[in-house]
Image 1 (cartoon, rainbow, N blue to C red):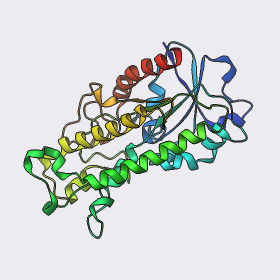
Image 2: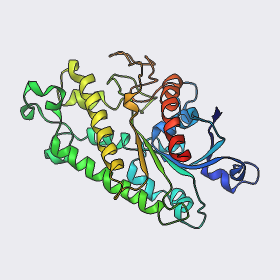
Image 3: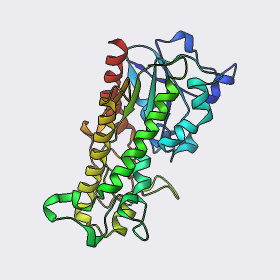
Image 4: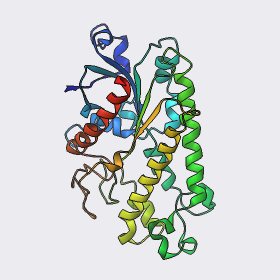
Length: 292
């Protein structure tokens, strides 16, 4: 198996570091959130899902996901000038596929909205007096109107990415979008000022600590189901392929831990071992589409 070679988009302008795009089997354009970038911020502690991918053929990814984009949102993909230019602009070229990491930071951002002055449609969590019946389990804490708002936002931005793809030489090329593993809300930041992301809002809403892991799992699975439904809508999202990484067996982090635990480097990012597990499951699904 051959590791995916990852080059920053800026390298295309360099005569010495430009990727050899004509000498490989597959050429990908990559864009995404911190799961595609955070390993570059602190390589000793964090991993990068792109760098863990292995294929039967040689492959290169030109990545517009840079270290400074650790909190990139899906809406930013369409506004990234380099991504837009490489996909449908002046420096566009035909790509064999697009690799996307998106939706996770949008979910995290939506969780940060506090209840004060915000109706349920503008937040993902319910206040204590809004909680549903205990028989609902972790779903009793989730704002369904807020989830619909987030889902509509994700849908609109995925449509924008599809439109960008189909406006250039890569029209109809497959788009590969991954899901996320199931995190444990805990006090484990990625560095000074970088997290934690899940534990503070769950605590602010008064959600019992015993329910934190179940609620986090529900949120990630709901995100996966939402993105999978869009990928199944071939009329609106042609050649969009979603891989549900939450089905991959990942060693969970222990509640209350502050550093690396299980397959997790921090609260929401995997270790190299965790990334390798996800990449080993995702890469064959990408190959299946490209070789089918």
